[in-house]
Image (cartoon, rainbow, N blue to C red; front, side, top):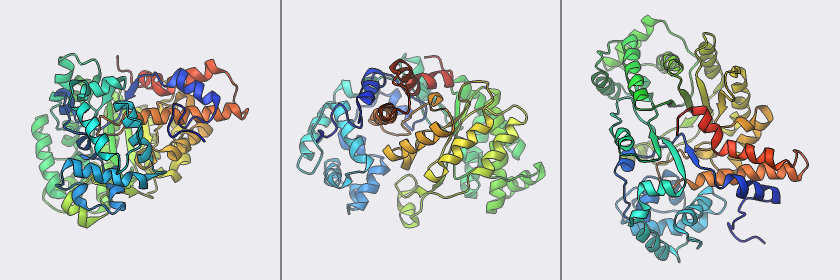
Length: 468
């Protein structure tokens, strides 16, 4: 019987162990998609305690705690940090076989050197030890990134953001590159007219553009796109339910825009037409400046209306969706490709039934201009766990080229999430190790070692083209 999470955790074969320890473990981290708060990096935030880090905004943990019968005051409510941590520790033994169990203990070991299993009996001891360390300069936000050998992070930022904190980080010489990612979802989200009107007013002001219709909206977005580019941005990202397969004339788009700006609620069909046209125009902008575009699709959001009203979004009430993803995605990519304006693209699914769809869809638009121009992104959200990652990599291996994969990201708001890269790397090495042991691929450690290093870091560094 193996020891729990020893040095060969998840590494079932000797080959896997050699690949991980000899190649994957020491590779730097290229975190090309995350939600870290830029102001906390700029200010080199010092956390007061471990509960603030772990429970301050982690809806993964809140979902588990609620499932375990923990009252809301210990999740998002006004209970004290130590009390919240105690409730999380009481939940931990019930998380066996949930990735939260592994992530929690990887973080305890990787950052704090703690090998103890978290539970109600060890909660106080672990809380005190972690909190004492977090209150020292060695555990500031920036030093947590240094500790994990992070070379670059790309945050997620709205077009109206000033990017002042990215500029500040660049100006003070922090060796980890912190770049923005343009996420323009609000500019095409017509569902709430009052919110949209307010947003357009902000976008109009910051872009110094009078937005009167669809064409001037694109003009404003072009100006913000150029501004983001000047601050080092080389990625966009869209977090949407699906890419609509809809078309509309310029006149229709202006009519839809005018309706929303007058406070009217538009039909879902008109909202889809507007979003479809917007994504096309954004795609052309991304290509014109040599950016990579990302699409995170497939979520049913805010499903609990009662708690959404009291707690707001991103609080743990979302689920995998079963939208039909193919038609709109194919229409958009083909439309852009037909005029040679399809940028490098990463698509992320959240429904595992779409794995083969996504893995084959990207092959339609590989054009030989660069290795892996079109990418099937790593297991996302509900799929960033062992089974989800294995299925994503197996689909990509069987239907594309795993060796050209740009690898893992954190997609996290927490500076303590970087062991997710270790988790991914161990799973990757185990997949390859099993293939070697089964005689399915050659035991060429030079070839395999280079492949592992590429997927862990080198492919992303080459793909995004940001000088480190």
